Every structure is written in structure tokens, then in C-alpha cells.
Image (cartoon, rainbow, N blue to C red; front, side, top):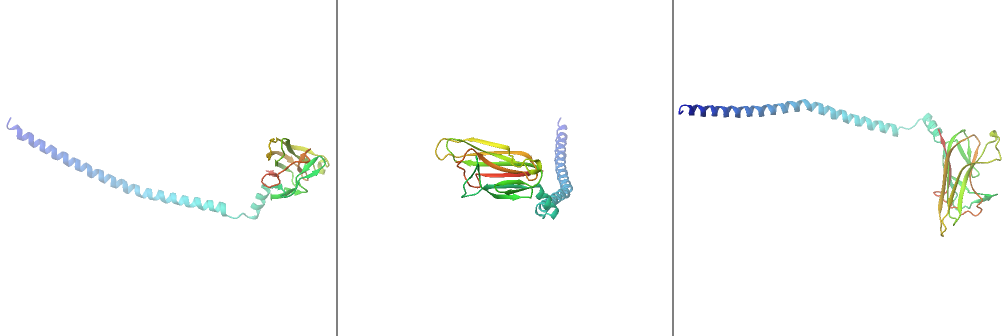
Amino acid sequence: MSNCTPLLVSVTVVTLCLSIVLIQEVRVLKTDLKGIKRDLLSPLVHRSLKEFGYGLFMSNMWEQHSFVRPRNRHEEDVWTNQASFLQMAAMVNEKPIQRGNVTVIPWTVAIQQGSAVTASDNKIVVQQDSYFMVFGQVLYHDRGAIMGHLIRQQPSSASGGVGRYRDLFRCLQEMPGEENSANTCYTAGIVKLEHNDQLELVIPDRPHAQVAMDTESTFFGIIQLQ
């Protein structure tokens, strides 16, 4: 028994030393693997970042080119033809005009684009056959009454409708009964119109209509649809 004890101690010491050596070798291998992995990935990451930056640069250049580049004459003509519209606003410091059984609002051109529609004698005149969206709003100050207006069409001579009116859109609004009452009435719709058709916004059967004559409250307009 006494002879085995030194042998066991020696085996234990040798095993412990081998374990320490193996652990150290594993650490060295892990360090080497990390270095190799870093060396392999570094060029890829650098290239990816470079390509990403180049992509952003090209994207910004494209956006600048798209939005800053001036349009040529052909593009301007196409854009203009696609964007014909007209909006008229009530003339400030003017009063509504009584004409027969309707009240007409005096208008002034607020904004206009294209040549498909024009303004004349408080009316919209169509210069090109097309579909249009027509809209109109009036701010009323009448007290305790039902107020409203209609947008009507006077067909062109080509369609044999001169002198006749066709009601397109109507708006009715019940006014509050208190003093200093105010209420807007808005209507809009899509209609097909022909060359020389005329449109007007009138207030029927209200000779003393109290209308807000300011540009942001009372307006009448048309937009060509393509």
C-alpha cells in the first residue's frame, strides 16, 4: 500500500499539469480563431459600408435630380394641360347683385392654371370638352332661415341650350336663430362639360342674403379631370 501512494500522487500531478496545458491551448486556439474571423469579416464589412454609402449617395443624387431638374418645354406643356383649374373668390367690399329672382355674387379670380377654363362676367366658361369637378362655398350670416345656393350650367350654342339653365349641384343650410349667426354651405360634384358651356353660382329667392364677402369663406371653382 505504501508503494502505491507515491504512484497515485505522481499520476494526479501529471493529470493536473496536462489539464492546465490543454486549457491554455484551448484559450490560444480561441484567440487565434477570433483573429481569423475578424480578418475575414473586416473587408466584407468595409465593402458593405462603402456600398451602402454609395447607394445613399446615388439615392440622394437621384432625388435631387428628380426634384431640382428644370422641366423642358414639352414637360411644362403636359403638366399645364393636366392641371387646368380656376378658383374665384368673393370680391371684398362688394355686395351681392340682385338679378331677377336670384342673387349673384361678384367674383374675382383668386388662382388659375391652364387654358381649359376661364372666367367672364361672374361665370366660369369652359374652353375644352372634358370632365370637371365643380365646387362652391358660401358663408351666410342670415338669422333663423334656410339658406343655400345652386351651381347651374348654361349649355353652349353647339348643344342648342342657349338661354336655358340646368341645375347641377345644390346646397341648403339651416341657419341658427341667435344673433351674429354664421354657417357655411358647401357643395361639389363631377360633371362632363363641353366647349363654351357656362357655369354660375346663384342664391335663389333670397334677395337680402347676408353673405360673407371674403376670399377664405366664399368661393367658386372648377378643376379639370384627366
